[in-house]
Length: 322
Figure (tube, rainbow, N blue to C red):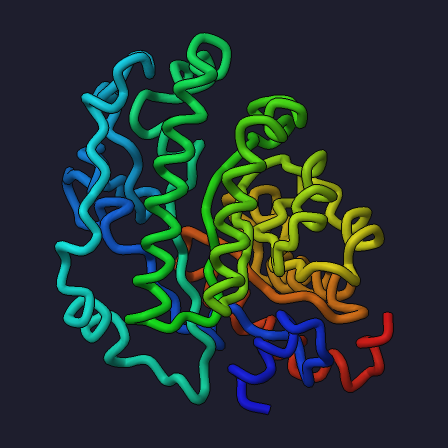
C-alpha cells in the first residue's frame, strides 16, 4: 500500500498495513479566508482581526477587536464573503503544486465552525450569553454560516478534490464543555449534521475537529455519521471512548499532549513513550490515526519519528484484531 492507500483504508474501516503517520502521509491545507495566516495583524473574510503570536507559532483573535456585543442586528454587521468572487483555480493551483496525489492523502482543515465563528465575532463571553439572550438570532447566524460552509465545500471539492475535510469547532476546555449537551443538541448539532451530510454528498470523508472536553457528545457524533474525530485530547478518557466506539469511528489522536508531549522539560524518552502508549491503547482493532497538534517543531519531529518507527511494524504483531 502507498501511504495514501493505507491512510484511506483506515477511514474506510478497512485493514491498514501500518499505523498512518499524520505528519508524513498527508498533504494538508488550512482553509483560505477563514483566518488570517500572516505575521503581525490582519483580517479574515469576515473582518475579524487576528494577531500572530510567536510563542504559539500561530494566530489568535486580536483582543478588544470584537465586532458585535449582541446578535440583535447581526445581519447589518456581519457580511458573508462572496465565494464566487475568488480565482479558485489559481488559489488551488498554488496550494497544491507540490502535492503528491498518488502517495499522500489530501486533508483540509476547514476552520471556524458555527460556534468558533460566533465567538470570533463577539468574544467568548458575549457568545455564551447569546444562547440565552438571543437564541433565535443564534440559530439564524448558525444557519447562514452553515450555508456558507456548504458552498465552500462545493468549491473545495471542485478545485482541490480533498480526500478528508476536518471541520473545526471547539466546544470545551480541559474539564468541561462550554455548554450542556442539551444546549449543544439544540444549537450546534443540526448545523454540524448539515455539514456532515454535504461533505458525504460530495464524496469526501468528514472529520470532526473539536479541542477540549467533548466526551458527552461523542456518542451523538458517531450517530450523526462522522468518519473520524480529532484531536481527542486526553481529558476525554479516550481509552473508554475507544472501547465504546472504536469499531464505528476513526480515532485520530488521543495523545497526552499538554501533560507530556509539550510539557516544558519533557525528555525525548518521555515523548517517545507517550507515542507508544497512545498506539498501544488506540491502534488495536484499527480505526486509528495519529493526529497530534504540536506547537514545538522539535517535539513534532520526535513524535513523527516515533510514529514511523513504532507504527510501521505495529500490525505485523497481529494487533489489528485488538
